[in-house]
Image 1 (cartoon, rainbow, N blue to C red):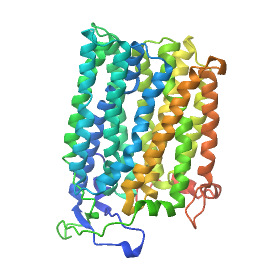
Image 2 (image 1 turned 90 degrees about the vertical axis):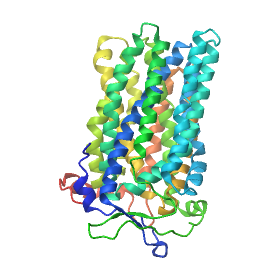
Image 3 (image 1 turned 45 degrees about the vertical axis):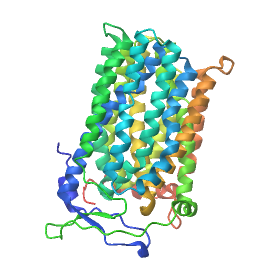
Image 4 (image 1 turned 45 degrees about the horizontal axis):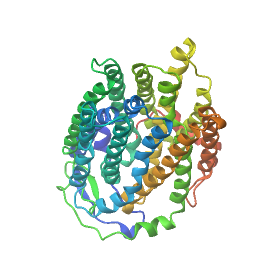
Length: 480
């Protein structure tokens, strides 16, 4: 699987250095051929992980609960569980940083996180044996989802720290754009096929979901096997790529234990500002985002096969936007794409107010909305991920990632639960008022991003007004 990164990786030493000169240490050296192999393996890992996540979540899981007569508040609770599970990420970061192997730690965490879905298969079996009713199976499902995401939350900062050590700083936008494109192409195919198979399965949609769940679990295990083809990283050591063929063989030097991450974050005003922006955006986004599919399935009564087809258009947009936005973020930074696509996401809930069951909505309106959502979401997630990698302190990367994820989890879950509650209050206008409120809050959450800056540097707004970014954007050179 050629990711088009061979030349670039050969030319760029991968080096994670501390910001202060007194923190610099002799790094471990890894041959660039091993780095290339690791990046390819991680991309394949992303493909199978996409299969797992799409078959155990998303629209298929929402439709499963709709079949169990779950209402909008329960759907909101289900959507909040993965975000609330992020609260454990700081604990996972602390735990992972005290291990001696990123690879072994991720394996110990993610294997049970994937295999716990076997218990949902057991629950579906008991349901068909009439030992569980609709309500019991819905609760059973939420417990399985909670266990899986709590375990995955423990491993997420360690995985991201692993990738931060392996992916060259100058190629992060390009590499993650390619990796995410491969994952989203997989999602496009898997969601489309799985949706129609579940909707038309001879024994009913619940049985069809069980078959999809089996495939998803197998894909999840395969994705973990791919991680064993990646270069392992000891969090107690620095990692760099071997700069040339004449460089000395792989070596490693231990570094002194880092100072307290809490003390570092307490003095990092830029990261604190990022957390405020990130938390506000996540709350506003999730106030309405989990209820778009519910609106189609429950209010408009559109068949799950068509809803999954609409959702697959999100992956089409991802394929179109990820690679160019990855290149642009490498050239002009992450804030301009973040603000532009954030504005697009701001108007999205308002556009849903004009959707109905007429032919114009079904054949033009809905496809365009899902394409807009997919393209904007892809760019925002890529830029937020890169922005975290950019501002995280080198000695406390996992802790930074974990705390950011915990804040996003708390605020996202609060938004989802609040949205689910508002959607059940007919006096407030139901989903109509929910979409309007979400749109206003999304706009307000973008404003602080314009003023956020490191000490001594210009803010995003100041950089935007001098138009220097336009020269970088139009520069087609791939040199770093």
